[in-house]
Image (tube, rainbow, N blue to C red; front, side, top):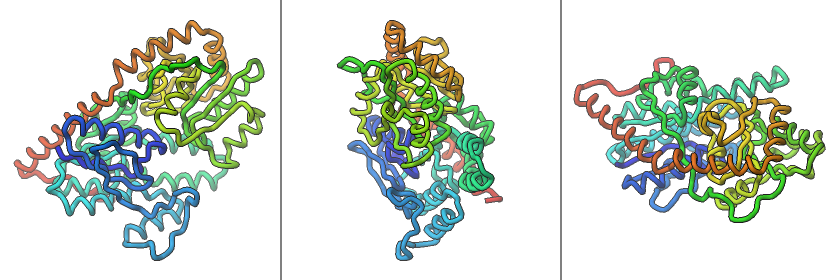
Length: 425
């Protein structure tokens, strides 16, 4: 099958969506499919056999000059003007503008593609592709409405809240597109429920396909570093709970030697760095970013405990990756995390999200119990291998493709109308 996999930003270090694009595309090719990834910047890392078609934006958020104003010679068309105007008025344009560019490109090549797979772009251009006759499967990892709620709750001024509401303005579009989607994939039952509740998607159109873990995440071949705690989370996103972890770690440091390594790059001088300074834990906390998979796996395997302090997760790849490394876990009791680790308590200790005292006490108990850590790590490894496989993800996704193509053929044979844009677009 000829698959066009769309993702508006896909570099693995941008988050789980980039990891999803890389590993799913590789396994789809291994199953015999022809896979073309269409992506905006930052572009993905892809494996041999997967084709990349670059769909360049104005790249307004690139480092080291995010929120830049481009030279007028960079403006190519009306979509570029829309992207720039949205950024200038505090909105986030990429899902919409990427979808419009990808649709324009693919409408010229309708005979080259059997199915479109949208990786949570949920832009109006996706509806245009359905209207053009292409079957579409959409992955929604989780509705970004959760990010908006957490960010608004953490905003301290009315000006900041107003800016955030404008930034998240793309969610209205995403909800409209999601409700029109014929086939939706979610990585967990929890995420599926949230997509139904927040986006109003018909639950009959959703199938749950858990994500996988790459084989590079394996138990370490050397002793773990005593007292080391590792977390893989965006440091400056309130949703990821790093502030709670830092507060909990500061409490731990008053009674024991410990080290915290956070796989993230906080903004220089931002609230995360300020909190580290205020808690006086600068010498015991390290932030690392841009690690290749083998180094990331080695880091996770070097820790005595891994922590996922998020306030919400639609799946949580870091949780599965730690389990695959036999690293025992302390995780938040929220979103899909209990579903991922299992509800029997064998693979992880669960804590109340946002509760630094609960997190500190639970980390301390686990650090003090090497026998339990070993038992928990072994159980996590068994669960990761038995439950989370990228090959299984690709096989289940292929079944969704086949169903979407069959539905489209039956609709076309019956003379039914294809998908179209909402009237209030």
